[in-house]
Image (tube, rainbow, N blue to C red; front, side):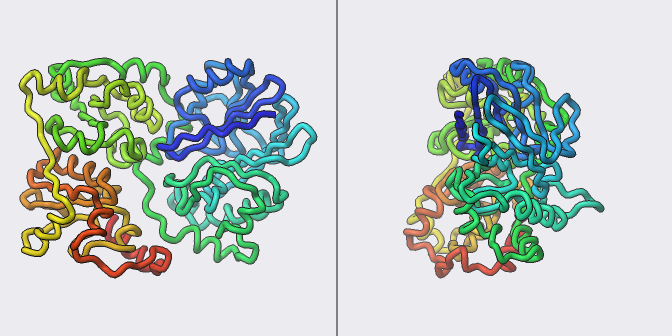
Length: 483
C-alpha cells in the first residue's frame, strides 16, 4: 500500500495518491494533470478512480481532464448532481483498489454532498480517512458556502456537520489517520493548523469542534461565528466543478504565448485585457506598466486573484519573472481564470526599450511615516489587513480597509486624496497601491515593510491585545464595518 499526500502551498490544498497492486486512486486533484500522469507512469499503475470529496469552491479540480486521459471513473458521494458522467456512490458503499477497500461515508455539513473516504488496509483494518473539507486539523469546514436562500441556512448545514462528525467520524478508532483537503491559509475554514495530517485520537483531544461534551447548539454557534464573507470566486469555481470546463492543455497553450509591447497594448485596447504583473513587490514598485495590477506569484497568488478579479472570463496578459510564464498561467487556471492571452516577452526591459512610459509607487519607511504623522501631514492611513489582524494591534491613526473586499468599498475613497497604505509585510499593500493607481488615484504611498516595521517604530499604536482575547462581538462588528 502506498499513500502519498501531494500538498500545494499557494492554495493550502492536499491531493492524495493511493496505490495497491498496480491500481491507483487520486483524491481531489488540482487542475493540471501532468504531475499525476507522470506519477502513474513512474509507478506503472493504472488509475481506477478519481475521488472527489465535494464540489470544491476554492479551486477548479482536475477530475474531468484526468478522467479523459486515463479512463478512470469520477466518484462523488450521495446527492452530487453533475453535468458529466460520474459514479454517485451511496453511503456505506465499498470500492476496491488493488487489495485496499474504500468505504463511502456521507458526511454532509460543509456542503450537502460532502463525503469522507475511509481507507481500509489489506487486512480490512481502518487505516485513514480522507475528509475533504469536513474535518481539518484543528478545525472543521465552514458551513456557509452551500446555503440556499429560503431553504438551507448555515445553521442547518452546521447541524448536519455536527451529526456527521459525531455519527460517522468520531466513532472511528483513535489511531485512524486524518487526511484533510486543506491546511492553514485556506479560506475554507477559520482556524486550521499548519499541520497537514494527524491521528483522529489527537484531534478528539485538541480540535475545539470535536469536544466530547459539546452540545449541538454550542457547535452551531461556534462554527458559524466570525465567518467573513467567502471570496467572490468560490461560487463560480464550485459551478465549474459541477458543470465542467475547458481543457487545461488548451488553456496553457493559449496563455503561454510571447507578446511584444505593441501586441500587449493592442490587446488592452481591443480586448480590454488586464495587465497582471506577478513580479516581486520590490521590483514592481520601481517600474511597472501604467494601469497594470500587481499580484506577486510568490505570495498567496491564486486566492488573491480570485478575490480581486471579479470576472473569470477577464482577458489577461502577463508580466512575469523570467521563465515562470507557464507557472503563472497554470496557477490562474487552478482558480478558473482561463482567458490568459500571453505574456510580455523580455519583461519590463522590452517595454522601456521601445520608449514606453512606466509608473512607480512611492514608498516611505516606518520611521519616515512616524515623522509625517507627528507633523500632521498624513490624513489618510489605510491598514489593509483583515479585521482580526487590525484589532489585535494597529497604529492609532490607521483606518482598517481590508484588501479582500476593496471592490465593495472603493466608493469610500476619494481619488483626490493622498493615501498611505500598509499591510503586514508589504505584499497586500502593494496590491492595494497598484489597484488604486490603476483606478486613477495618483497620490498613493506604500509603507515599506508593513506592520512588522511599523510595530518597531515610533508610530503611535494601540496597546497590544492578544487576538484570542478579543470578544467575538467586537470582531463581528469590525467585520461588518469592513466588509
